Image 1 (cartoon, helix red, strand yellow):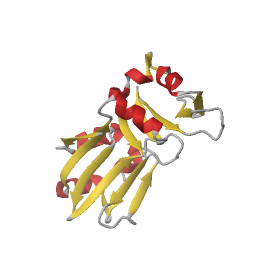
Image 2 (cartoon, rainbow, N blue to C red):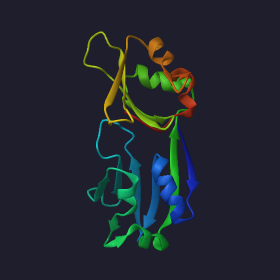
Image 3 (cartoon, rainbow, N blue to C red):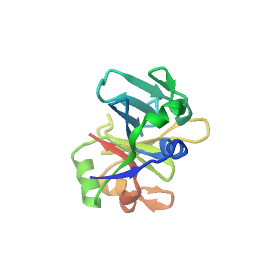
Image 4 (cartoon, one colour):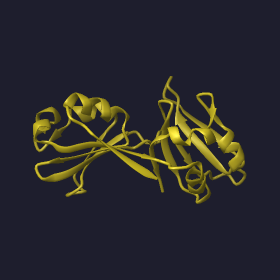
Length: 177
């Protein structure tokens, strides 16, 4: 896995980055903060703001708009901007197809974004299913589940016209464990 860091220099840039970034790190009043994009279509809250110095201090947001209108220590996020420092987007990606395949073979649950949609690749409770891929449909917000009998079938599954095995480098918001 590799982590790329890109500084954010304006509140407008923060607004855009909050919509499509894995993690946003910043310091505010001497404390380290982290905005995490859940990347998991199975959970209702898609973003979590964590005070890294006081981990029990968290806020959960269903979407970017909720985050952008949140309050920290009684101030709106926009009002906090001038006091924020070290604001940066952190992007996590697989370094190789082999690394992606190894995470699958290790039985990891993997969340990622691809082609503008969030996916969750995980184990299935069904004995004959190797892994299953879950995502939310745009219309109606219903969940879609695709089940795979083996690794070869999984890597051949097409998203946006290309097999998953060829798109490992295009995955964003990668999180696994």
